[in-house]
Length: 137
Image 1: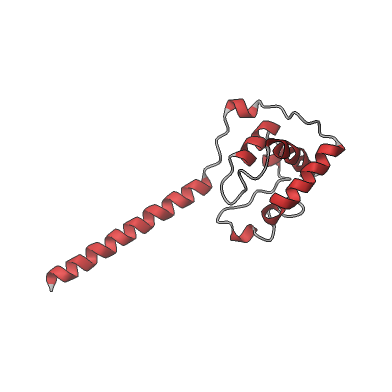
Image 2: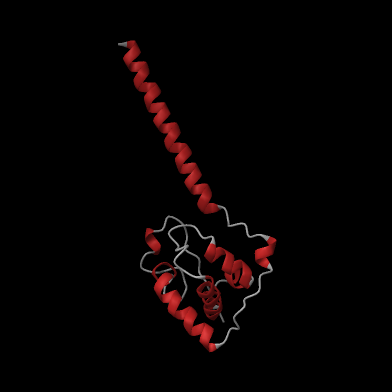
């Protein structure tokens, strides 16, 4: 009887330890900001922020980004509550102060559920230009 009781305690402790480690890893992933390389920071957008790039970026944003970031980029899209981390407000100073290269890199290397492979490099650069329209006045 004593052996069975000890086995239950050990099993419960192992389960609690595994659950704690999993939760710690998941929360740490979402709390740590993405580290952008110096090369990415210096990348220049090959597309001028003109109306053509803006329209292409708007179109791509509506397909791939709006469901989490929302129509106005506030992070309040229809799927934002399903994401287990804070969805960035694209008009915030923290986002708008980043270089085009940083934003491009973050779109490219983003955490799930952000689309990673469905968006071409050209579309990413156009989305960066479109994100600039969310800047708070």
